[in-house]
Image (cartoon, rainbow, N blue to C red; front, side, top):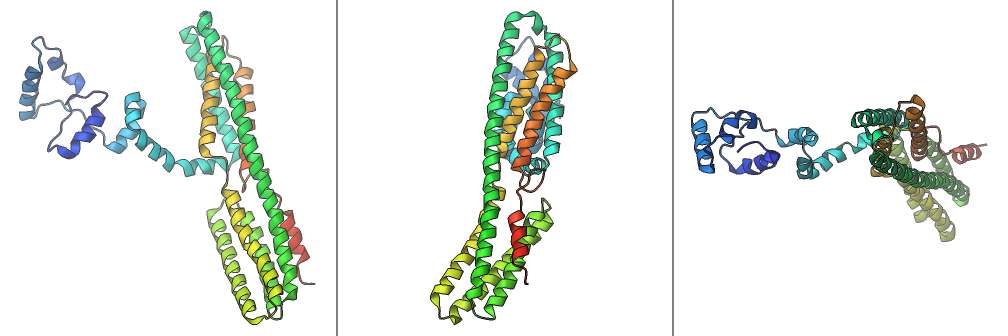
Length: 352
């Protein structure tokens, strides 16, 4: 078979069923394709003779993984064929993108750099294409750029709304968890000894564990250790709860204490879920793509390069994106959920 834009797809399709599969190099087979006496039978006979003599100018066929990396830059048709593989590779790199979003200053700096680069690229292409001299094309590109910037502003507004709502939810859960632990600590006073003392000590340790859980930041080792400590304390609390229910004959007090302890344990799961509930990464990708295309379209219509135009607009967008990323990041950045309720509770329940 001769190499064409569909070669990779045909090669990978036929490879499992062929004993030997060779791909002819198109540049080195022009003598066959440009022959005067040309037909499929003549071409097939000449190629067969070359194969028998092992003289066919072969073209190297990339493997499926190499094709997905190389041919995306060479053909839109292959991009459509490699859609599932491209999505798989993209999904495998999403954790790295999520790690980038934990550092808002890096997000803003990277976006600023690429937008400035896109604006400069648009300016150079516009100068070479003489877009400024063609009024019709200039009006169309201006309209496109304006619509893209409007779309970008709507996307940023949408993302900011999502980030703020998640921030408010995380802040509310901190207050609820502190109230639930405090209520459980007070209700422990109705239990008999030694259960009262055991629960008070466990709840003081639990408050420290919850503070450590947030202070772990984005360090996976510290985060795993804090979650493991929290889980072990919850199991110890519940073991004591079972012992109390089996020995204490005052069901009203036991049920009230059990409900408070259940709420404490449930709020742990709710806080973890709230920390993991962030702006979807595909929304960030869409914002980045629209921002780059909008700045590129703006650069196409520039008649002269002016550094303030190329930097000020992208800088404003980058600052807005960095601020949204900071609000959306629950474990890093300048805008953090205040853990004051837990610290105040820790001070209140210390033994006198």
